[in-house]
Image 1 (cartoon, rainbow, N blue to C red):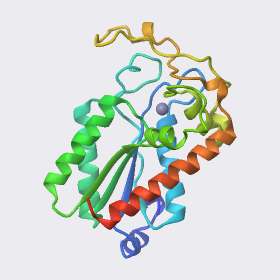
Image 2: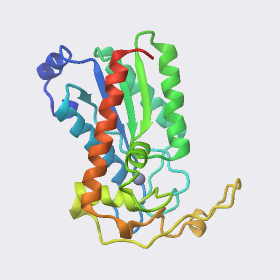
Image 3: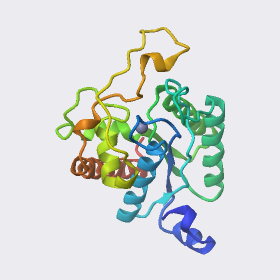
Length: 239
Ligand SMILES: [Zn+2]
């Protein structure tokens, strides 16, 4: 049940079937010289859509902005502040709560550390605000890396590398502009640097040359399987 495609009456009928909603969070962020800026948003929205084909669940409109610290100076990255992201997450959940939803999955396609901990912080606040909600916060990249062991060949593959390129080749091949060289960032440990591109010129973390659409299809399937297990557990309400 994709909320932005539903009518008012369909939404009301959907509440009879489930009180669970997944909110995809993404980013508008460089993804190397070969992947679109919307990569993270597209990933999170795609697995939401796939999940909703398997079971009754609401999928909220994706949030296309995130907190992008280390890529903020790369061309095309549009980063927002942690305060804005936190407020957005809390306001969106409040609006969905008012509509009758009670189980919330904040699924982020962007896995930046500051971004993810901001969503966790918002989730903790929501648990304090509402006695009758259950909240999950997770990065779908984490699921892909975990579930993709045995599929992915690149060690420590992360941003715009083998995983994300494979998934984009599967999902939206027309948006992939060739490939890019293997690269890892070289930031000094513990020091916040002004000129981030100096330490990460091409904005790739991993090896896109090993990406295939077939790996992407298997990864996506594995991510949706893992998400489905998570929703089962959330809805059982043991936690
Ligand atoms: Zn990404």
